[in-house]
Image (cartoon, rainbow, N blue to C red):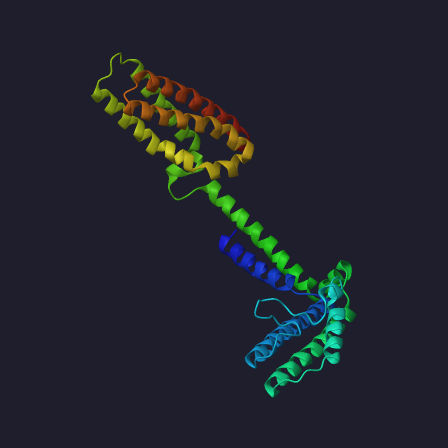
Length: 310
């Protein structure tokens, strides 16, 4: 399978599903537009009222009709208690009725600002009535409306996502099983690499056990041999984790890499002990690393048997 083809299908599928999935049912879209117009109308009312209050202040008039006085207190046109708990439409109606009952002499620029505010309130009332009349579409009807408009396109996009994901998964799995162009890093050599690391660790352990009083030169030589194991085959084995998981599954991967990870930690501990010139700890660490590597090799052999039979 071509991974590039899978990625292309996956990208196109995601784009199509996002486009059709974000669309709204016709009735719900109309509802949102109507309610949005009511929200914009409320914003215009607030803007016009601020302009009116500013005009009053500029003309030297006292604060009134919901404008704030010099102390920052609002001079309410309608008592807040009479508006509390009422719908925006009812609040709008009470404010307009209160404005009709008020009469006040004011300069032309203030009168004009007031008329614009009242006009915006009337427009808000119209928008609020429309929003109240449109109601709210239920989820079932909304889903049916969306499916009728965008369901086919969304389904096509979803099929492309599934197909692209499957193609990518197969291609990546094949890459992991077949390995790279470097033959030493391929999964075919995984068991041999693991056995090689075990053998070199055994030799290292045996050589260390034969040394009664290690010198500084001995420590440096052993550290160099250990680093060669860590940075060589052991590093390649650890990097092959995804291929091993793809080949043997999560359970097989865990059975192999659990003791292998323990061995790696013990070899790291051995390196630190050699640096600190702590010989007993270094000797104990390499012995435990050898035991863990033996367990990893045994697990790898068990896991490779079913693969050999297929």
